[in-house]
Image (cartoon, rainbow over all chains, first blue to last red; front, side, top):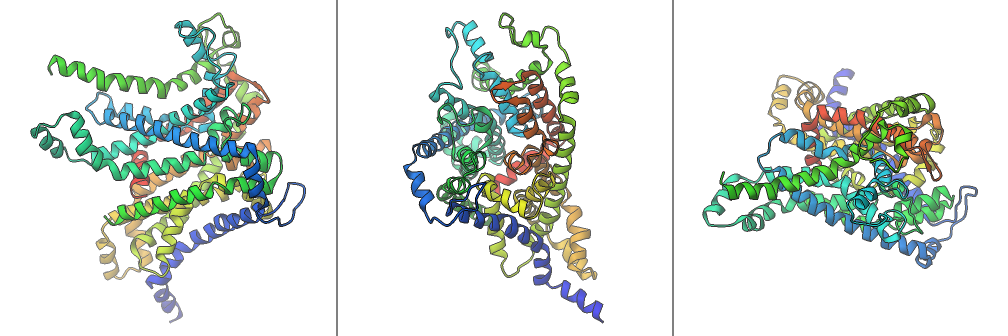
Length: 298
Length: 280
């Protein structure tokens, strides 16, 4: 009898559903929600690696606002995110359109295109470092030998070019994600639509503007916002290439919070730096969830 | 094809494709030839750097005998396999519950899963060091097996909820009419049908764990416990001095396993990538 009632209890929708999601919920409460609370506590304290510190309210945040390096880092992060996202979108969409054509060896090409996305980012960042490194840059070697430059360019040692370089490498890594998701979006557009518009006399640009783009828009926006979240919070590319240098010109919020919080041991200040990502992240996340919902019900 | 169409195609399809392939694959070519070049060629400014004259395996020998690379490989395998297993064990049942059952709090759980998937790891690594040392896992790669599921499991759940929704529920209902319990229907009917989705979620989780960097850097500091990305970066670069040959050999050797796995499952990978972006 007892066994039978346990079975019946287990078979209730409510009970079983919670048994199935319960372990996940516990993990997320313990190792996401709780650490988040700890981060907020730290951010409101002057804790260091050596001392537990005391509550200082919003002092860390006000100090950051007066801190020249923080302000520059915030600006760098915005430039990095917008620059890399625009480049990834443009190049990724272009590549998706090309891959949507009839091509020989299409499968092989599609696999090859995904490689930068698959490989561990710090490891490929090392290859880029070696391509751009001051003394032996092969890129400079090619520029000099092609007669385009006298001595090559200071890819990682001039502040403006260093920012360009980290954006370039982030773009290189992110293009495959845009290309493959947008290609999947393109493949869902029925061919009849293009035929119909061709009969109506529409040229390639009109077909792209009035058929492709509107139908691609939902997946385009979701890909774009997802990529912005990742780029805004990126750590690996900058850490691997420049570690924030030269003269903090490429520091982004994630690398600065690591340097201040763990490398220099000012945990409170470091936690505050990373939490200042939150307002913008929240806007992107809320926007994304609303769009995913709409996509799910449509 | 008319001549004009041929020229247009060359200009608008093959030229951009060729340019993209050179840009996307160039760094890998550079990685490979550097790993195979003897030092006498690497640092000789008079030679063309674009090819190898006398290829050598000396950098790989150095990597395998003079560094802890093999140990890092073992650690990375354990971490990636363990974290993937945990993520699947938590995420597949949760995804099923979200797709099939109406229960109190379902909306909240669903939102929580998406939010935790979207919250970046660079927001939480500072407190995570503290949390891991409280439970006594700091300085061991097992910390990563525990921590990686925090971003892997929400993704698996999201992916699997979407996958289960594409499987019609009638078969499970038939099994229930025949006397199977809900759990039995999940185990014997739904899971076998969802195998392609599970494989794709697993590959995703595995490659994400293999490539993870910020937690691996901050939670594990003992050299013998490191994973490949951190080990290669930390041990083969000292302040401003880089061992370029072994560094590129390490980058290559650390990338090959994920590239191999992925080449067997490109289609599932692409499907997972697009599902992640489309319906999540």
